[in-house]
Length: 143
Image 1: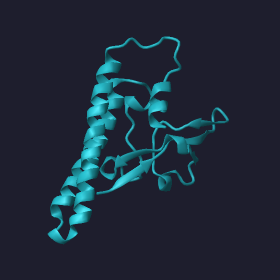
Image 2: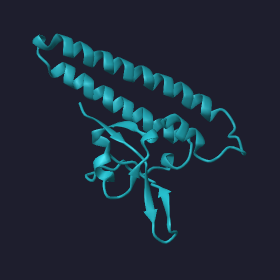
Image 3: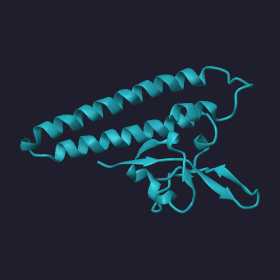
């Protein structure tokens, strides 16, 4: 069981001469020397979703609000729940309290999956607000 915390970060764009928001999320370790993390964008993912450098893969969901954003979050929650289930099953009877805690966490993660699946249906059935700032909903969900 290994959760990883990833963040967008402000990085220097030499051609433009300004700091810009990264297009990828990464762990704090991966961000070191590349920019400043935007702490409000913290997201928990399963460590198996990170590349060797500690970066979360770039997807269309990172840059715009789509049903894919929900799919990405649902996948992460499911991986984290599965990880807890595997660890709980691997423990012996002497680890009852810890095993129970893992099972509670797994159930809570799966509850969150169900909630996101409902939200995904709600979002896909509504028209986007043409006056809304792109990415606003995604950023609000991440905070």
